[in-house]
Length: 182
Length: 375
Image 1 (spheres, one colour):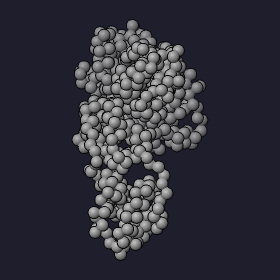
Image 2 (cartoon, rainbow over the protein chains, first blue to last red):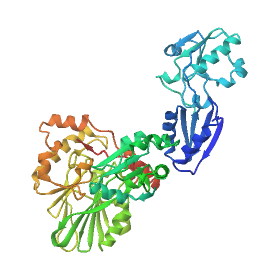
Image 3 (spheres, rainbow over the protein chains, first blue to last red):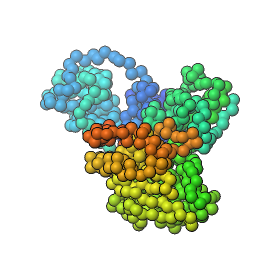
Image 4 (cartoon, each protein chain N blue to C red):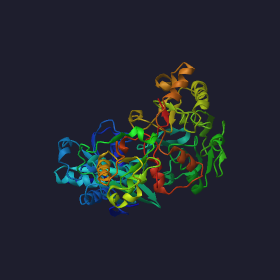
């Protein structure tokens, strides 16, 4: 799974996986994803709880052959911003509508849970992948909280997409089933 | 200032002697909420170690200077780190060697009483998990009942007492902890008994333990007699030892009674549980000292650390023995059940011999409180 940084904490026991994760996270910029490999079973609960305490997003953990891979997304200044894009659609309406659900979160976030049928194009790749999208069809842009999708919707509009809607609120409020690619 | 390393037995003494202690538990809030070191006069502060990585200044005002302070975590590493930070800040502190893992595994053997002809009965109190195991000793021979998985504690205790373990019993197929019974029997050549009604799926050889099974320990006549007492499981069996003690397994505890749902059949077994508690046990001598396989709360410990009370006293005090209406009893034991013990289905499979996880996986499976009772 794609991550911006990797940290090898295999063989280390508590508290070292968290101590090292904390250090490395300081060097990431907002929105980047860190993958921490660890063998200490207790690191899963601790990383999730630590991330919540400091305000980072714990994305999920994969376990293969005794190695845990934790994914954390940096959110150091997750301040609430006014969304700018004025065409919006309520989260509850998108699955009963005809358009395409475009999920602009990072690949790891998408893999750990998304709405069935949604298409994944992370925010950072959007500009390069515009040709994959159909201008005639409605597009419902979704992210975790509505902030990234707001920016993505603006970007699409600036490239001539008119049938674009920002989904509010984002995946944090989604109560339905989640599809996983893990 | 200084840092001391305490082992689980030092902490056990403080629990049993009702000493004061301040515990700084640096595990996750969930883990602490679920399970901690219980002491009647212990005080606690729970703050996860990862909230203290930038410093401990904010908690310093909450750390007492007039009583002993013990830092506790899951395994040891984090408690040592925080203990060092506290020490640098001028506090005398201790940390728990091996953390909650070692606390979960520690057993304190305590003598419960003398038996006819110089025999002795020992209770092995697993304070961290609330499990109670037993050893009956007489004239060079021993029987072990409801042994936990740390078999060496029993075999070395037998060696120290110069007795040979001849019989190993499990009162039922346990769901909250991994039994050491089969392994003790294998290593000592003793006979291993299980109630056949609980053992339909077991994949190893055992001797059936049925109502009326009697064994004699040593040359003097100390009888360990089985009494079929279903309800927690369909095979649950009690023992009367030397006409003095009643080992109740997970059917009757000091302050609570067994729950009937851990093998998935609460509705079916509630009638059996009722019969055992309200009929079979009532026919026994009320002088018998009840020795259960668990305790749930620290208040169930006697002053000497044992968990034991006369049957007659329990008939007066135990709420579960005083629900006169059958329908209400059914509601109490099926409606308001606490969460099931951690990994109980896997633990049952281990006890059936179907899976054999590595020791550290077994440790993970047993983490947390036992939750075999309903109050």
